[in-house]
Image (cartoon, rainbow, N blue to C red; front, side):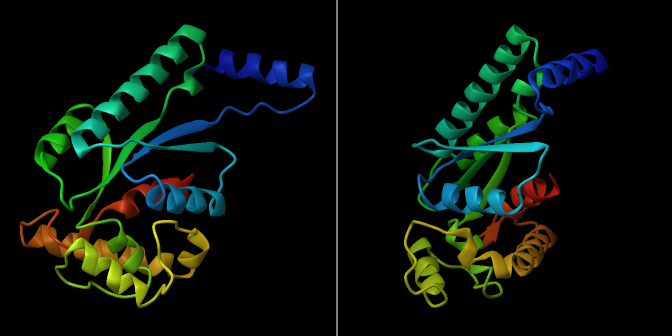
Length: 209
């Protein structure tokens, strides 16, 4: 990411008559096809930055296969960046977003992610916990279907399709509540217990631009 590359880019922009400011890129691989991508794309749209691009993709399967797909996409982007001599084609950070509910091999997936610099936003039992925290405090240990029922008390027509605008007003409180739950679990030496969610780590990185 040398100065010479930036200068050449700026010169190309001046010749072509428009600005070509290089942008950092974050890759987010989600378990869900609608819920997580819908929320994260809406969140990024609301907090759009001129210097950050967030690419959200869905990957079916269990957490382990998701981590493997994230590694594959991340490495492919690095190879392309090296091939084309453009460091901004590589991802600055790569994230996986998944639930604990009804999944096996989560410890192995976490270990593989940590060993390959893949960041994790995990919700236990499910992503709906993160959505619920936009409206209320810690709901206590719950199964995934009960978490959805609790969310419908605040969003009666909740389905897997999510519009961030429905949750935007409660975002700041959701972060504080998630941090409190996270800290309580850490203090009890029960990291990742039900309920817990680290989605806020990803959203705060996006918001920081």
